[in-house]
Length: 308
Ligand SMILES: NC(=O)CC[C@H](N)C(=O)O
Image (cartoon, rainbow, N blue to C red; front, side, top):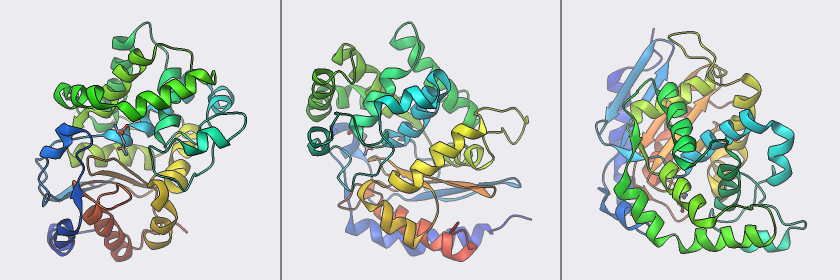
């Protein structure tokens, strides 16, 4: 028996959709500015299958949701100790693209892998002979978790970010000056902007969440896609830093691990129970989907998902 009916899910979307008007579509990456402010969709993936409601067919890019996947790959490649030599484990309370804590933290290392400075550092750790290799590895993980071999990145969005990534460029040069990274900055931005531009729909996203909730095991094949030790680390970061400087409030209100992206993507994983994929491009001032956040809070309340 599925835990929620189609009608109930549609009702939750209808109830949350008016909040879209109170948010703004992000346009600091110009291509993202083309999104439809009123779009809202959700998919809930459990062992009984997937239910979805809203603008389900809409494609969107992962943006910061990709950070949990690159973290998982870097942890597989280098192990826990070496990854956390380069990046910390603590929430910042600052916006995702803030540079301020980088300077104050001694020795200089990004506070966690969910802020841009930390995610850039993590992407630099991923193994591969060149950017194509590395990107293919990231794409393959996304495809396996979503069970969708067609997933690719949107080159228009990637280029749009690459051309305007002034802040991320400055973060990279700061990291390079402090020897946190040692690579060519343009090469790093090339792969980072492509990983952020990986494009999918909310059903794909919900299956990724379900694999995390299922300790890294594919629900159809029983194959281990990610070791449990790594899904645990990733899920913990979702709780402590997944919603940036709104993570505390979201943990209080919804009580479920979640990771947001500036495209309006929202991935949630409820350990042992379900994966949830949400898309709502109208954002609140913290850069999280305004209606999507509401929707997750309501769903958590309705299905008693709070893990605390
Ligand atoms: N919050 C986000 O989704 C940020 C991701 C975006 N690609 C950036 O680096 O600015």
